Image 1 (cartoon, one colour):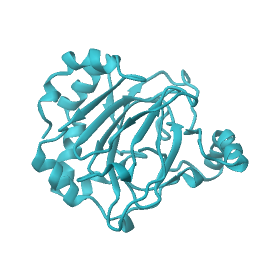
Image 2 (tube, helix red, strand yellow; image 1 turned 180 degrees about the vertical axis):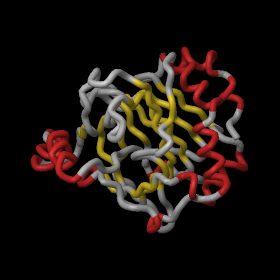
Image 3 (tube, rainbow, N blue to C red; image 1 turned 120 degrees about the vertical axis):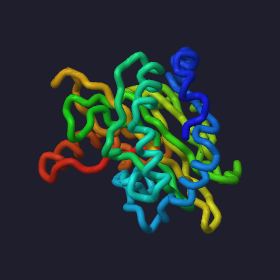
Image 4 (spheres, rainbow, N blue to C red; image 1 turned 90 degrees about the horizontal axis):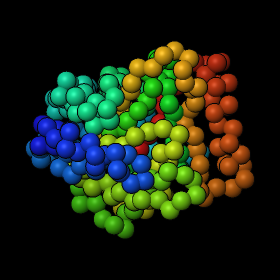
Length: 256
């Protein structure tokens, strides 16, 4: 299923660590072509996917149940959960990592015309496991014949004020990137023709840490084109989510 990169972790680790503007690795031809094509065929329609809980900060749909969408999706899920992929990401980072089997906040992500995701850093602790520290985002893009005028580039930067690096979300391109307090990312509002959507599958990898060793925080939003009310909401979002969680319990979180 994976192409030759899966056996080159030691060789690719220096490239990952030297990534710009933070440790990352862009992998084209992430999967063999037949698998990528079949994953696209099994990709859910937007109306079969719940709207994400990004509130005013994004417009996309997400569905975490990757393994339930078809035989290729199940095989892809099993591969991400397998020892070979675990060994690759652990060697790449120098940490003992594992993929969240529930894909909490991850899975299929899809945005249509007008879709966007404001610049943000991701939540750090798994909402259901207080000793799981989120360490990596693993993204696979499934956008065939993606045109430059669609935009939808993933914009990444190490601080809110710097100029971002742009990564095109082209078909069968994988992105493995560190996630921490300084890995800002998002994409601008898109203009897409009827029937065209921006599709990705997001997976999150964690490491075990001591209980209480990390201060848990939710997604930290840093919207670039926003009025004073939206900016104020972004500043107080973490507090608002903590109050909401205390009252209603944990909800699904975000990504790309």
